[in-house]
Length: 389
Image (tube, rainbow, N blue to C red; front, side, top):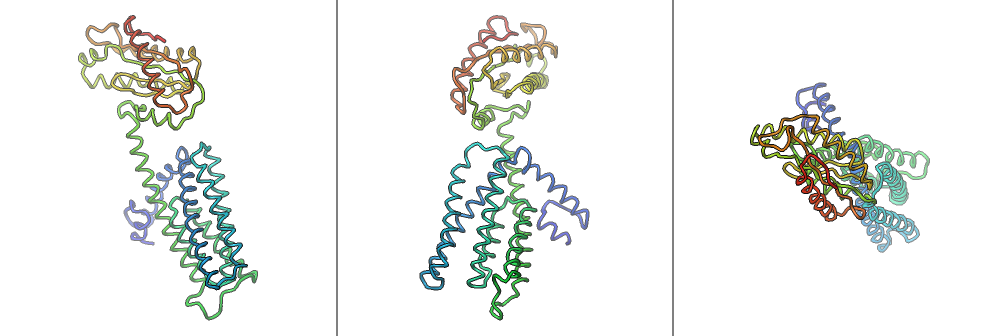
């Protein structure tokens, strides 16, 4: 394959020959990171949702087609009954799974559900292909399934290949076992050549669609990260905190510490905004270290204010990590600005404990922030460089 074919499937590659393929493969491996690891759950859910939606549409079309054939006496009702039952079972099962897709499943559970659904659908497809070949000797269902396969964009490339192999092997097995046969002299093209041709074209289209899907996921991820992350400190921003809470259904009480850098305006006025940015990053590092040491998330709430949201109800433990942040800032010994209250830059904090589990209630979280803010004000009034709560 030359450069033109390479660009058709891998549009970002350049050069010629093996160099193009090496660059293409390296680029594809980078894209795969948006399909595996932290993104595996979303990928499996998208794949399952797309697959089931296609199954419902195709099942409805086949059901309508079978009814038309039966009403015109092309197919008798005896042959139609198992087809109707199969399609109804597929449709109801798909609808039931789609109904429960929004529930919190682990990544492994989603992958298992997805694989079981694929195997079940393939078994149903085999039944339909067998019936079509037995009655009409045509590859109508086979062609329809290939169209569905290339319409579902987020199958892995090797999975698409294995599904194509399954479909072709099933038809060959039906013929070799003498269960079905192609009508002699009634087809305009050799059915085996037709299957090879359709399989190659389907694989090429599926590869390109899968890569386009990964590119779209990458773009979505970049935009989502940019909208939910503070660009200076790389901590979550308010929007990121809200989205984090919506995804995490925590069923116990939480603790929240609201921090403020003491006399930060004086520091900025004395050393300039570049030094102020460095000071913010130093404080963010303290919060990041604390969050890594326990079940907590660090947030830049705005300006020089930060939040540590502890997913624990133990106030003493949360207070320990909050004081560790204060001590971490003292150890950095950043000389404070002109007329600052302390010699070095320090932090003040207000701690609050929720009266009931947050679950996914963003409004309750902001009520907790307001409570922590009142304690922070008290800490400022009592001399700064301390935690109240």
